[in-house]
Length: 265
Ligand SMILES: [Zn+2]
Ligand SMILES: [Zn+2]
Image 1 (cartoon, helix red, strand yellow):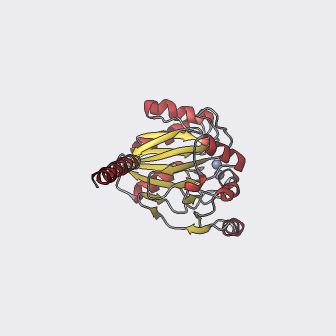
Image 2 (spheres, rainbow, N blue to C red):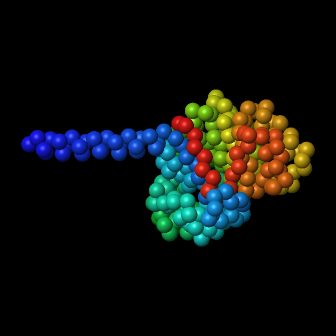
Image 3 (tube, rainbow, N blue to C red):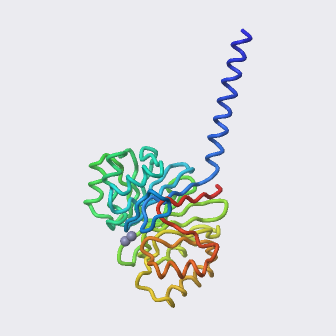
């Protein structure tokens, strides 16, 4: 009897230890860059496109899927990311460098809801449904799950686009796809949706055609809006990224495939 009691006690101790380990892993929001024009971690592949994974919140989210399925899957494997863990997919806009990896992802896991701007083509929506996933059009700004918001479908640029906003104890984390609606407009929108400060903005800023002067103006607006850190990447442009890096100094966060960012909840 005593031995049984000790055995049970031991089991309980192991269980609570495991529980402790598990819960300590969830007090942070973790973002892993899976697809980008630049490499950060050795063994991953870069390519024109963007995708990242968000973990440690209510739902595990895949934001965008890059261009080529085989590169997305290679980077996932390389970074120990299990596609089966993804519960929600959010697509910023209907350009191939953000939607291209979706069919390959669906072959691994189609038990997901796909949040996309409401203006997406019927072809895209049908593709999602045919794969067995759920298509959820996004129009207005919306809460996607606990602590995660979409700017809603922003219009007026060359293509409708949504960006992702995470609420953390450090402030808002704004993740962009290509920023076709203008990176400053996106940050402004995020600010209008919350009274929290902007901790960091990262993703593609789409400034390839912008002169140094125009980029510096955007940086000045970033600072005015209180953007503490930034990580310009993907379609921002090498020269333009260098300007952000110079202006933000230690608060510039280098991106690239394999970069992992952690934010306290
Ligand atoms: Zn893009
Ligand atoms: Zn685009």
